[in-house]
Amino acid sequence: MVLKATKAVQQLYISSQLPAEQRKDKAIEIIKEGLKAFDIKITPAIEKIIDASVEEIVLDSKTPEEQRNQRQDNLLQQVSQLQAQVTQLTAEKTNLENQKLQLEQQIQTISSAVQTPQNTNAIQTV
Image (tube, rainbow, N blue to C red; front, side, top):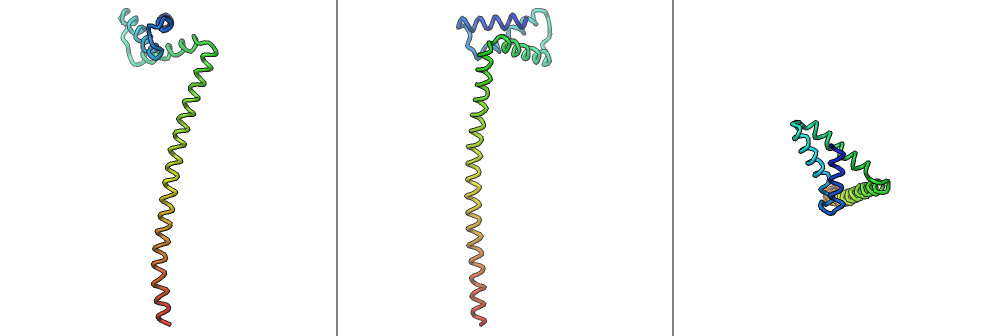
């Protein structure tokens, strides 16, 4: 049933009757309708099996080039996410470095203010 539903959905896609991003959902819908026709109750476990089966059949039905392209697209998406994370972390690092510099300047200012009166007192006692 899963194979037939997946092939039917693929045919709808090929004939431009269904957008690519709706194929999986449509296949799952057809499978669930088929199971209901046989009075089979859809449980969360059955939903997981349906989902995994559709994924496997879709992957198996792809040509090696399509599989390679899909893996490549997934890798590019991961790289993009990592680059965004690097950008965010770099900005946070810069912000923290600026805060550190400000704190160091405040410490230096406070240290200078504390040392100045001590030197003045030392000169006055002489």
